[in-house]
Image (cartoon, rainbow over all chains, first blue to last red; front, side, top):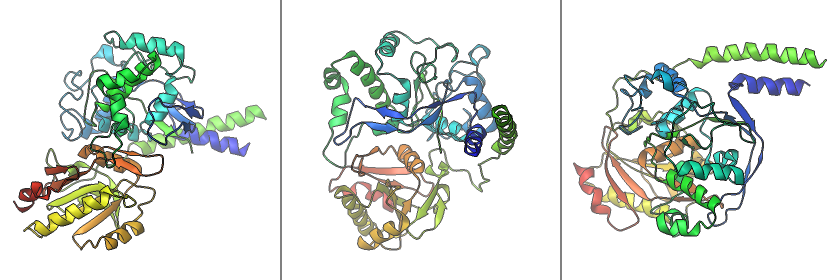
Length: 240
Length: 192
């Protein structure tokens, strides 16, 4: 009983309880594996139910001026940073759209300001339930047509209770850059070979592999200060 | 009983949440005498610990020319080569007032003690400093530098091999990629 009080207290103290959900522990079986890698055990963690919105990010920027479009150091973001805002603020009708044109550094700083962090690649992939056949069908449809921004809440919850993992924006993960290794310290360049262009897509034999391939290839094309008009993020937190 | 405990939980959560919100607004930005230049790495506000167990924030590193690389000390082959290339640069450089920095990928194993042992083993002089930090700081530095790395299943790291020369403003003025005997690439940057 005391344990539960303490436990629930802890969660409610550090979480914005209404906006993040607990993802249960489980196993994630990645499509692309390095030598010696098998499946990953994912510990239970908390994740934002929806991607961070323009409104939320605007509030953050107001409180943390160094992340505003005018002030941000060029080592932390490219010139497209928040370029969809006008006069340093989001347009009224886009307030509940996911914030995009944000760099990895800015996304991270936002999460940190909420006592959170970016999800790891494995956590994100696991929580997205992307390998489920029905989800997969939707993902492929989304990938195949131009993107349209919507309210982050205009999506159904997936089996873990999170929304809009697919169909709205791509999302930053903490270790996005760890997939492709160029100029390796050893001689294994297998991962990059299996991801890049023609060679990679030939290896993706099934549609589910193709969708995953797209996400991994996209992430690997980014660097931490990249911003694009369909790349947003959501935050996560480890459970103690 | 059940309702009582729920009530207690709710009450305590609300009060603690309020406290939390209250604390949330403190500002991490410290006042700095001089703003870093646009492309300076001294924008990095991250805590590191040296091989001598001293804590230092990246932005407070010496404002003088430095040569740096990211390595890990359990590394079988590439890292000792990077270090020896940096030593070669140190030998060749006419400018002797340059700092040499090694930042470890290996937050788990490369604690200050281990870094110190590595420093001695590699016979690195007083101009060298080795740094340890938590994983998220390591990732941030790597991403600022464009160094790619990944922890492997056997707890080692695959990583790109790059040596950077920074000027006194903390701007990267030269970088040398790969393990090739081309030490001279950045020499000009060192002596200017």
